[in-house]
Amino acid sequence: MKYLQESALWLFICFAAIGLGAMVFQMVVLVPVVAHDLPGSVLAFNQNGIKPAVFWTSPLLAANFLLGLLATALHWRTTRRYWVLAAIGLAVLAEIFTVVYCLPRLSMMGFLLTGNALLSDGAQLTRVAHEWMRADVLRFWALIVPAFLCALKALSIPLQRLGEAHR
Image (cartoon, rainbow, N blue to C red; front, side, top):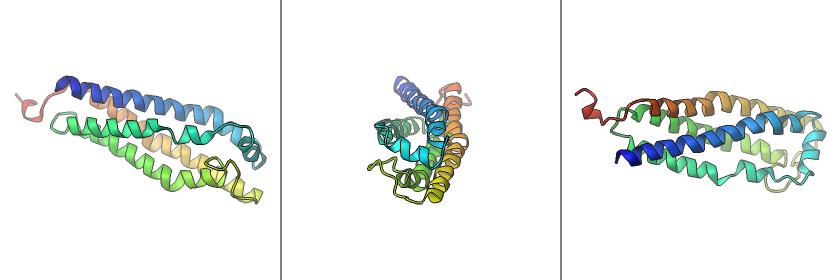
């Protein structure tokens, strides 16, 4: 059982690290390309042939949630449970925030599905792009990084069942 618990947490952390790296790539590479000359840069980005929907709707996220839930279930009666629960809880909040706030803005900018911006007014397109960029930074630093750090903290705690912790 210990091997399964360790493996689930390690896989959750590895998948989370890939997602964290993808977010850093997005902030360092994609956001500057999109933001350099608003609203024209959004329209140009939509016409460059890149399919950002593939990046933002990766099955990696779903796999990581399943691994997080598995790790939470396997660590429920261990000394690590609160840190694993905090990690998956923050990850779930990040995903909810993404679906409720970020994805509609990405859709309005044309980054999902159609490749055409749903907004024709340049001022509105610029406003939506700025809203998405601010929300993305907030989501990264307030939810995604803390979730990753909570998972790492969980891994740093010796694995013991709750009843055995004080023996």
